[in-house]
Amino acid sequence: MSDSPRPLHLVPHRRYNPLLRQWVLVSPQRTERPWQGETSEPAASKGLDYDPVCYLCPGNARSGGVHNPAYTGVFAFDNDFPALLSDAQPDAQPNASPLLVTQPERGRCRVICFHPNHSLTLARMEADDITTVVAAWAGETAALGDLPYINHVQIFENRGAMMGSSNPHPHCQIWATEHVPDDPLREMAAQQEYREEHHSCLLCDYTATELAQAERVVAQNDHFVAIVPYWATWPFETLLLPRRHLGSFTDFTADERCAFAAMLKAVTTRYDNLFQISFPYSLGFHQRPTDGKAHESMHFHAHFFPPLLRSAEIRKFMVGFEMFGGPQRDLTPETAAERLRALPEKHYLD
Image (cartoon, rainbow, N blue to C red; front, side, top):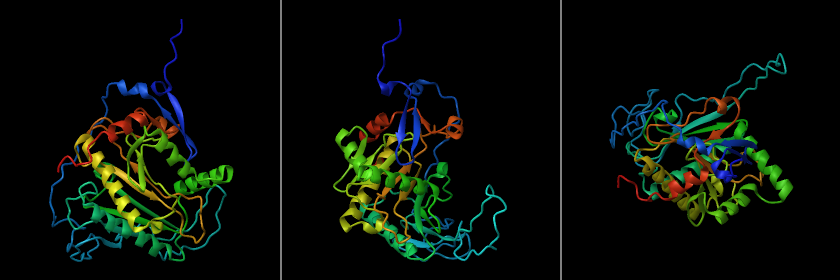
């Protein structure tokens, strides 16, 4: 006699990610397995307002020898060791084979320090100070996007040594590129195809669906919603979405900048409260290209990809099936959202 059917959320199943047009394998039964893999001790914060050896603190010398000004708010500068150059002019040579294709790539790399206080994170900053950072993101997007050879502005923050951050000072990077990178390009194509088929916006419709169901919503305010996406790959991944259709930081109203800052603080505070540590993550913003075209199907959004799985010491590794097959997760998005939603909005250190 066969076992009776179990609810879908309790058995292995696939979920479709319409933004990347790929499937995610969900294996909820694996949350019960014993863990004997690698653990990483969380790095303790020094709690220093100013670190004399930090190359991002006010007045200090950076790695390239340039001294920072004694800044008191947001501070932006060209990366001293950029991945892209604005004047790169390689010799134009034909590709030897259609399988060996090379293209030159010009660009600009910028760094934005969020605050002069070395010990802060988005979770510990005041909402007004984060609003100033959001305004800086809009300004950088506009200024870089106006350059004739820049067609995409990618802003991202790697938080914590576990995510490859080489400096704990609150900061992010901007890579402005001549070509639109692969992931934003894939998302744009998916959104355009959806618009042509359904005559509506993919992420507008998705936001409405999630708000109606509510089970994956983590936090919300008048202008933005934070969701553990139905197709999430990382254990406590979140997607930040505006309630209205907008394509770029440059479209934000003053109220939306404040509301977005509040949402960033709400999500990062919950992350810290989850395991009572300064939670590591990669945060990235996807916005329309700066090539002068309308890109009306593009809906601005932010991705949080945090690596921690079961505790402050146990992280998710993208190996094995993830490397050779496709994305996989154990913890269901609904469970992750429930845990994050239940956490207090007040930081555990306050």
